[in-house]
Amino acid sequence: MQANDAPAPDRRGFLQAAGLAATALSLGRPSAAGAEEGRAVVKIGKVGVMSPGDMGQAVAIQLKAEGFDVYTALEHRSERTRGLAREAGLTDVSSLARLVGVCDAVLSIMDPGAALSFAREVAEAMRASGRQVLIVDCNAIAPETAREIARVVEAAGGRFLDGGIIGPPPRGGAKTKLFVSGPGAADLEQLAGPQLLVQVAGDGITDACALKMCYGALNKGTQALWLEVLVAAERLGVARLLETQLLASQADRYRWVLGQFPTLPPKAYRWVPEMLEEAKTLASVGMTPVMFQGAAEVYRFVAATPVGKETPEEGRDKARKGQDVVQLLAKPTG
Image (tube, rainbow, N blue to C red):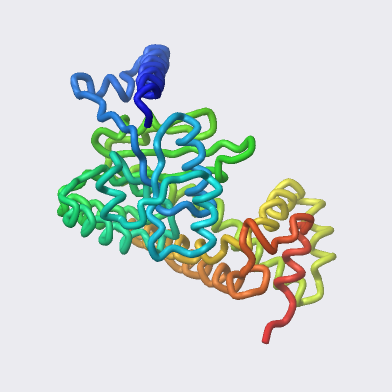
C-alpha cells in the first residue's frame, strides 16, 4: 500500500468497529470488538492470496479495490493461474519464502485437497525467511483438518485463523461472505468491502470451517443427489415423466437445482475433496460419512467428462441450460 493510501484502512476499521458496536447495542449484547476490548487490532496492509483461481482471483480484486497491496507466488503454478493473476494485477513474488517475507497476512483459497500440503509449504517458507505471518485458511475443510493446519502453522511460529467462504466469487455484482473465527478473528474485518463481507463466526478455532461444512453439505450435497437421480432418469428413459411430476409437486426445488447445473461441471474436480472433507466432518460427530463419500463419487464422475474438463473462463457454452448438462452427462462413456 502506498503511504498516501494508509488512512483508508484506518477509516474502514473505525467504521466497521462503530457498526459492530451499534449493532451490539441494539441487540443488547457485546460486539466482537467489545469482546476483545483492550486488545490492539493487528493492522494489515499487504495481503498474499494463494492461489488466484476462480474464487481467489475475485477475492484479490476486492482487496485491491479496498486499497490493499495484494501479492501472490506463481512459482510452479499453472498458466491458467498465471493468467488470472495478471488479469487481476497481482504482484508476483514467485516463491512462498518471498510471499511470507513481504505480507502481513496470507489467505489460503484453493482446492481443499491441497490445503494441508500448502500449510506445510508455507510453514517451511516462514522458517526459511525467518518471518512469521498470519495464515488464514479459507478452504472448505473439516474442523479436524483445520486443527492440523493450525498446529503446522503455529509450530513454525505463525499465527492461524480459520475462514469459510460462502457465496459465489465476488465479481460483477455478486457478493460473498467470509466467516472467520479464532482468537483475534475481528482483525480480519478490516478486509471487508461492499462485495466481500467479513463476519466473525466465533472464538472457536474451527467455528468458521464447521459452518462452511454444514452449509456446503446441504448445498453441494443436495446438488449431487439431484444430479445423480436426473442423470439416472435420462438413462432409464423416464426423464420427461419425472420432470412433469417434479413441476407439479416440487417446481421451485427443481428449477433451483437446474439453475445450479450450468456452472457446476468445471468446479466438480474441486468438489471431490470438499465432499470427502464433508464425510470427515460428519464422521467426527458420530454421523455417517457414506452419503458424502457418494457425493464425492458423483463429482468425480462429472470431472472426468468432457464438460467437466472445461474451465470457468474458457470452453464452457454459456448458453447451456441445466437440462442440457444433465443430458450431456447421461450420454454413455467409453
